[in-house]
Length: 573
Ligand code: ATP
Ligand code: MG
Image (cartoon, rainbow, N blue to C red; front, top):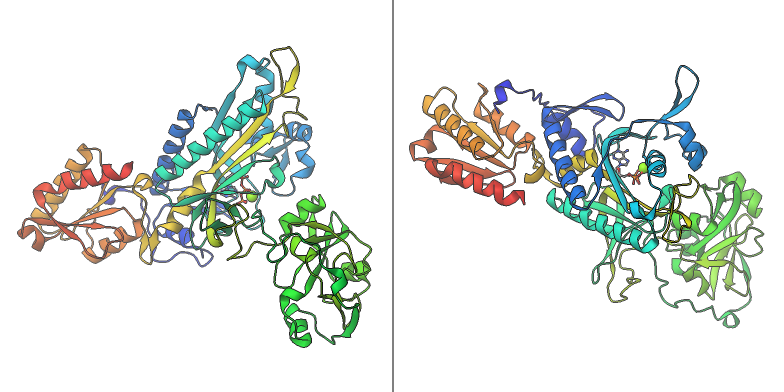
């Protein structure tokens, strides 16, 4: 393909609102343009990358035994009312009415539509398992669309759904999908990790996220440095350090003592004032769980994991209490809450249970209590409540320690069970003629998010460095002097030879200075660049450069097409 005839509108600078590197680079490299907040048009280069991602996904889904369908973007409210999600889903679901007043939504996901499809046509265990997938535009009215393709409102997803006759078979479907996902992300040329995840509002029991590792990722993930345990920090199990599970030796503590702590609200302030370490203080936070006050207790040097608290409290909605809520629940001001005498449900982290001589708030202004012991002075439901921290002992192998990584979630696999098949009556008759709900799994991949994640992970200050398998072009052929016929002819010949051997080439035949072309080649990010210059040509060589390499390699002109084609093939996997 010739640059001079392509629609590749590059930009010197991206709009100020683009802050994440992939957002900036995909705009600057002429891969996409914004239409509205979180809504984009894909230009030829961007679309080429997306098409390659889709092809890999399609091949692996098919290999895993899933069949492709295409469901509509517009979905009737009726189906969502059946599943109960019309009320539950919240404002991310874009709802509207047609001219007759019938309610619809733009699909943010397709469980309802697929369940409706399968329940109509599957009646017997003989028809199971069924696994269907689609690649389709989703709409989620995200509160804060950001990062361009990282979190759009309209985005392309691959979603697959499995239906099985029993839990074991459904577990196998999950495993097959899990393996397919590993192949997909490997084939896309991404560095990633599969991590245990919270199941969130879609529900179910087993769930893994596939996270592309990138410093700019919004997700925090922990991984053991000794075994293969890895989890989203939302879900990561935290071991109780020190006294594991042992109830505090309450009798050893002196009686509770009230101490004045004027104006000392934060853990740091109280600890400095009372000369105790943060690990000897119990942090008490008041939350509203579905509107009702609850207290969460963690050691002073720990953070509450709200996902764990939400789960422990069985709450659908969790909000940190404001001043008024704290005063109503404890009788004291913010910064002085504590569990002693508290009349609301209290959830304490495992570590708190072992605290025999702690400092807590006294539920009164400018006052704390010391020598407080769990079990003697207050009681609580004990659960794993704290945020995992770097250096924590691994809860699985106990040998390793946690390390933190930043990640971008590009895929998610859920074991759904009967969450949708039961309310929506997606049933079949088993071998004995008994009616049973199908056991489901659902599996999503963010196609557009993969493109952005690939750029976040593979780039430098000058531009994108696409992984070969999803690069819009494999090679840029760059004639440095357009006014030297030999240079131009060699470039054209190389372009033709490469295309003939199946390599995708962008020939930068624009009448521009070499410097401009180099800049654009770096920005566009083809994995290989071959420069044909007057001087090197006189020595019978061209300059071949890997996108992120510092120096080019010199390759004899007559070998160039073969060397490049071999290198491209080797990296396509
Ligand atoms: P997130 O936590 O990032 O909002 P999610 O848990 O809501 O993601 P799923 O419902 O599991 O996402 O959707 C499946 C996949 O779709 C995700 O793994 C992600 O790759 C992609 N995805 C989800 N929301 C968006 C979005 N707003 N923009 C682009 N891709 C998205
Ligand atoms: Mg989401």
